[in-house]
Image (cartoon, rainbow, N blue to C red; front, side, top):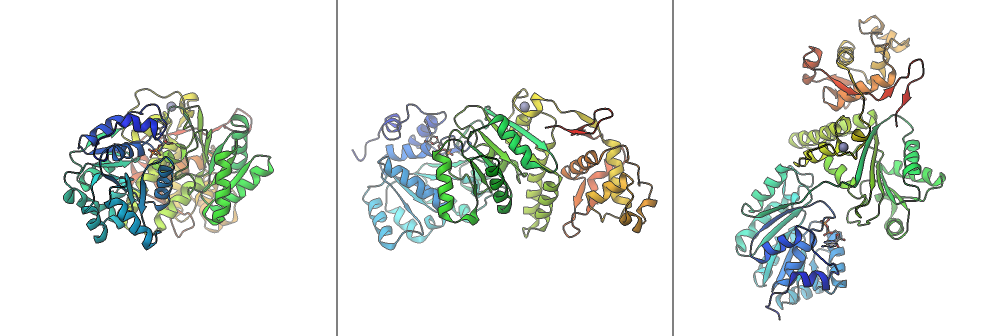
Length: 524
Ligand code: ADP
Ligand code: ZN
């Protein structure tokens, strides 16, 4: 019994209670059981775990799983044990006695799966222990941690390449939900997986409708309207950037009669757990959270994910919105952001302690996120393109597809804006610049003599909102830089020259409709 190979499908049904494999699970399992290596790239919730759990159980010996998050590791082991799988973990939370027990079980061949944190695995003691055990596979979860290009780089992951040297005949599988091609290449190279078969499954979540609005002020009201009109009484997650904002929004939604609960790291474990439990077990609970919420949360019927701030990257946006509609039924990813988000994120980035390469990377990621926000084309096409996937036709299920945005030729306006930044000495923020452009009577402007400039009043034809839109998109595209110390002062970037010289046309989204004779109405 110990050394015979069990049938994967039987294990899937008997132990996990599922009827069939989701592609490409069966092909991955087959590869590993045939002695080959695999690289699995699958979105969160796609079903990565079974790809290594089942072969580890089916083959004689123990599968060793490297996982960076102790909390998730413990959850997985607990769930496996409940299902009758002989699983254990080795991590810093165990007592010496517990460690000894796990070691004994491993050597006696009484474990199907052993979860280990990477630094632990690489210790002399563990390597020596494993060399005496019968290992049937190594699974490296969250394999993007090996990539410096990725967002969760962990130095100890790099040393995992020694697994290939010590155990050349034991199949290895690396898994991640991060898909950009560069990360993929780095995983292969650094983990010695050049020969591994790659399984890349689609990142498209067709049932999620993407909507991204830009707006100023009263975001809460817009959120409330969105929830009331499209998701009354349904479960959802609202993401905010700060704890303070989480509290504020949760309280306000409660006052409006919604079943909303806050969730952030400042709340204390009991409260957090209670709120999480209500969200998971009851119908129609809304969690207002900082980005900390969601790791390992698997609730199928989350009907919407709302962002009241701009995420830092498309990966983050995809991960967070991906928590909606896991059951495959229609769900919404709704986001609202504003000029201030763009400025704040840029400042945070410039002020961070990270080295230059890191900053450049983060800037690139933020730019890509902003590009997704400002695009007038299909959001899904843009999103998938970022992950290296091509969607042939526009999706028909995003705001831009459903209601094609109007654009306007903002080349001249952009030139005026850039030249206003230049003439006022690159020392002022957006509000001041807009006042100068619109020729506002203002003591500060007089004091600096800026009412004497040629740019003073040359933008009176455009409304304040339209000007803010121009500045936001100029910042988003990196043509203007935000000063860290100067309280949001704007500076010209080299890249603005072609626009100033009239060599590039700038088409911008029209965000305010100005009906003739009426006040500009905001689109929702
Ligand atoms: P990932 O690690 O890719 O985020 P998980 O391995 O946690 O995903 O799986 C996500 C969910 O899908 C889990 O609830 C899991 O039990 C379920 N699942 C995985 N494979 C299957 C399958 N073949 N049939 C039905 N449900 C599955
Ligand atoms: Zn679309």
